[in-house]
Length: 288
Image (cartoon, rainbow, N blue to C red; front, top):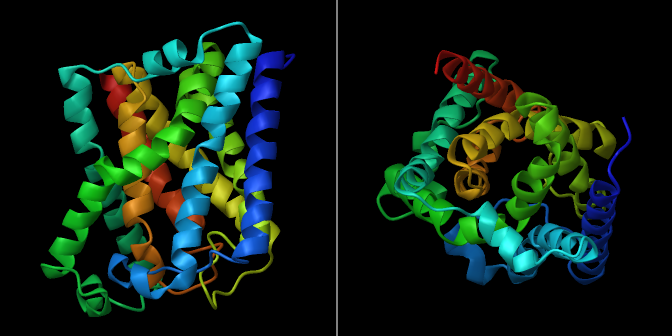
């Protein structure tokens, strides 16, 4: 099967523009390899640079969509707004979507606990000192998921579950979800290799290529529920909330689990956890 020219253009622009952002960040801050609580942001001089890098990088896929649509003689604003249809059902699902991440975190915790990879119980994470303790931490993460994190994630989702899904969904929902997951994962490769993205400070790993592969596998499994939510609502808004919640909450896995980062964090344990969540979503879809 020949790959449509517009998909090739989109991939080339999104990958190359992300690489340029990564190269600039590499020259300016060198690494984004750390997990830090929101209360410590003002004390870390690299954090502002990392935030600017992350947001800028996420919006390179929207840049790719806009350029590709202009080449196709389409109005980018009209098409992009069409990806974000709003209805009462969509709004309700949007607000509930972060709880999917919380549920999947529970699955991750149980698997990591069974494999003796948990080094700290969630209740012991007192160094974060969020208002209201652990409940307060998740409450803050939830609010971030549907507000500022969602706004940042919008930049990516316009490309992945907006433009690319529109181009691919005719081949099948699960098939398109997996292809998008691969493209989504490999798009992060230059950030992992140059900036140690997804490699926590002092973490052990075999090599960066295995980190890229494990990360891509995880995003393939995450892409399934994200895609199904978009198909269900005919809007990318739930995928934005899911993406925002992962960025807001999944970092806690770095704090509670110990092991090579190909396994813990966004590694194989995450892929298995999200694989279980994806299976549940598929079974629900089949029953509807």
